[in-house]
Image (cartoon, rainbow, N blue to C red; front, side, top):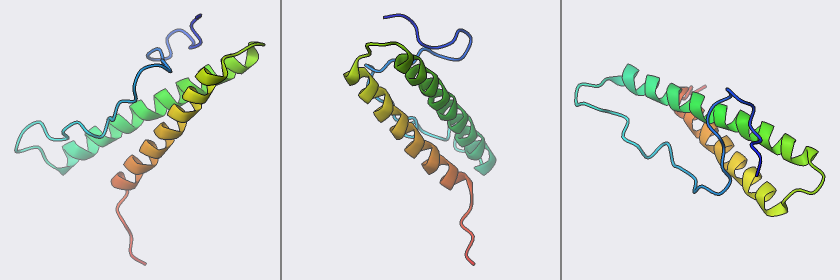
Length: 101
């Protein structure tokens, strides 16, 4: 299968790899790590998820351009993209404090 991601645009996205849960890794590397460190790690994970989401967008667009494309692969890519969107929304809600009106 040819590469569908533009060169220099991050890691190759594979539809056949199991989904990684980026939120399951520990956020604190030492007992003295503070809130700012946790927020910075969340921002880094958020940036990585957004980058992968954009890459998947490119992969899906390139796959559609090719005349016969694999429906199963397309379905997996779209499912992964939706999962990423949910994870991005979850991280964004953790970064923004709740404002009680």
